[in-house]
Length: 470
Image (cartoon, rainbow, N blue to C red; front, side, top):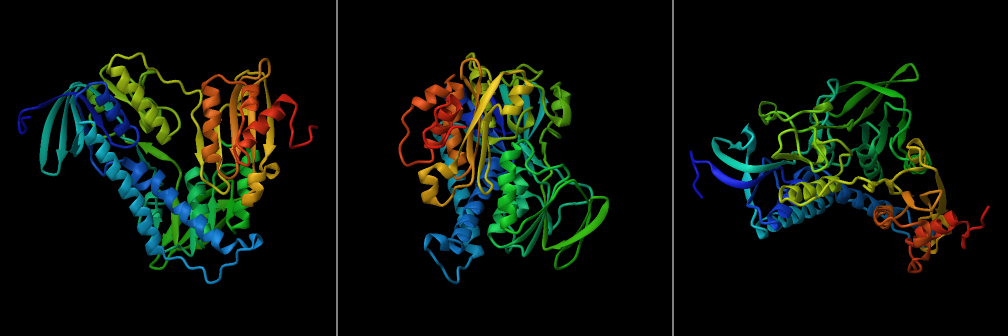
């Protein structure tokens, strides 16, 4: 390999090492391609370093702390429960470190070269990677862009020491006594719930008519009930106007119901969406076509308007989910290898780690009807499940949506303990073209939360065992 002024030749260049990029690089290498991955930050991207993984670690800490204080009704009374925030942060960081190290090992084990720096496209087959005062040119046959996204900054809420994005909210120097969250989407509600469990007094300010848009109202009502129990104030149909910052905290001004109000806090977490990282890469000069909001136009294999450049994850249309990016990365890598892989978004699960957890896959009853599908739906409550009762976590339900004519499963919604794990069965059922009868006839272990899915299928068929059919 010659470095310096001579370009290094590659089969496939991957830009970005998040869950889309590193998966794409590994799959490309598995098909025999010579692959180099370029990363300007830490391996693993946003998800592993300042997103999915560290946030779930803190959410787990919050659950442990909250359960330790409130398990009296199960006969467990703990006195003087304490939270060591520095140890909690160390635990979170250790999880991140293990996974980042694992990604590096996987890339090296698959003979993927790792290059540090910023990628700038010179033309459709050439990229310049800049790292400080060093630069290297690479030529490639194909490229996969997996550069992810970054938090949107509101002009009246510029990020500072006390006005933070989701990244800053993962590393507060202390648990906030009071926290204001601007935006009631899944990130704001997840982190707001976590800090409420850790002892913060939380206020969520949402501009829409309800929090957690995209999830069914029957589900969000249960989450809001849980937030209220934690002392979280949720303000909807509200407009965040501005913030005044001082040495000890902030004062947030917002408008709701035609009245201007203020709320004091230690910190403000701004979670109003994410912006794709497609700027300052030279893509316009190369001829890559952009869609709305800075997204890139791609076909069903992830191919952009420049035929040898592919794009995946947060920089293309669709939900900004790590598992979607990983899936698209495999498709793009296989397409480059000449395989007939194309994306099929029938069953992309979405999970929100609130209290209780929410998960959905495929159609909801409402979206199915909007698409002109004749469907029927049925629910089974956690409260009628033995395992849920034994866990003392009986809030929630499993709802299945099936085509009327033949019972083909087209969607599922789950809210309750373990929803994030339970949704996988329904994703598989939908992908496999299974019917409600197929699920009902599948023997589920007892006592488990998984039985609720079988019971919901029986309700859909009109012959439930553990609830009285209406």
